[in-house]
Image 1 (tube, rainbow, N blue to C red):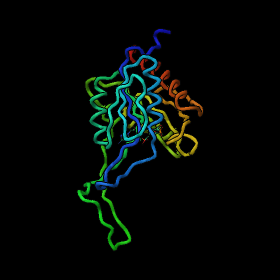
Image 2 (cartoon, rainbow, N blue to C red; image 1 turned 120 degrees about the horizontal axis):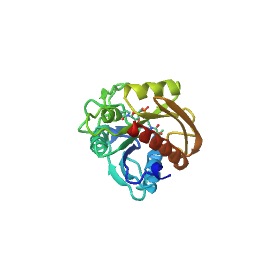
Image 3 (cartoon, rainbow, N blue to C red; image 1 turned 90 degrees about the vertical axis):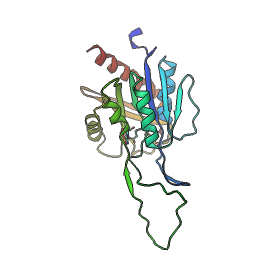
Length: 224
Ligand code: PMT
């Protein structure tokens, strides 16, 4: 099926966590290992796509044939993602971006005080995938993930609509055997007029099915 080939398609993918500094030695982050996003990048490159992988701080090897841009914070990921997205036909946001960062990063290491409580003031980070989907020029076909511990499908549909995405992969992360920092995952892919449940399997196998569905939907939208 030559029409279902990734050959020559430019694709950018975000993967891994972001890390938001508190002071020179401390940070806020999450459990994302980058494995799901790296699996998508590896398989897409094998299928012939021209892949840019925007990676948060993870110790994974760069998949063969993939261009990698390393970032630490959400603000850095935002800049790198916008740049890559404008040169991409398709954008996949698989990163677990920190929703908040420190209002001010302390220049010196914070000292322990006699107080029993410490309050950190956080401010909202930019929504990277929403700003990609909002591009007025060179907007790529935009695919998000929704990591949820409850109300999976409802919340994912809300993110599909609110962030103006073309597709979303609803990812149940309440089961410790899948999702964050594991070898396996399961998602339900949702788009405006369809839904497809993909059962738990190795992330590289799941990546093949996710990419197949994205390409099919992308080509449908392109033709319309
Ligand atoms: O990295 P692994 O250990 O392999 O785990 C994979 C995964 C569980 C991290 C991955 O499959 C996944 O679900 N990624 C999305 C994680 C997430 O934080 O989702 P969210 O529901 O908070 O965000 C929704 C969407 O908005 C995502 O596409 C996210 O990349 C994007 N987002 C969120 C916040 C923000 N400030 N900017 C964004 O672009």
